Image: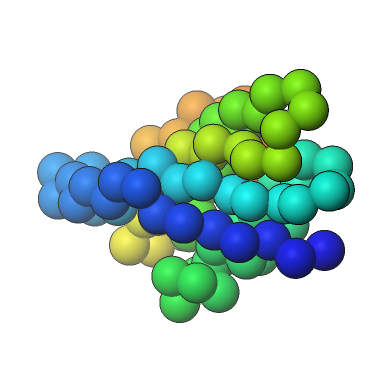
Length: 99
């Protein structure tokens, strides 16, 4: 699958020690990419730890091969675990916040 990610907006939030991103994912003639595929590609693009990257939203429209995503990159994975909601952690990692 050839995913192309374009960063539209990037905001540094020093108070929460994170970078907030708004991106467009182009996936021509394929289904909407999974959260894991987006995390893999985005972490490679940003050269960051995959565990410190949390995809908050994936917005896709029917019949369009373009998906908008909102993601957050923390300075460390533990910073993200402290701040992110438990359901976002489960969606991104597949485990509960208590684990």
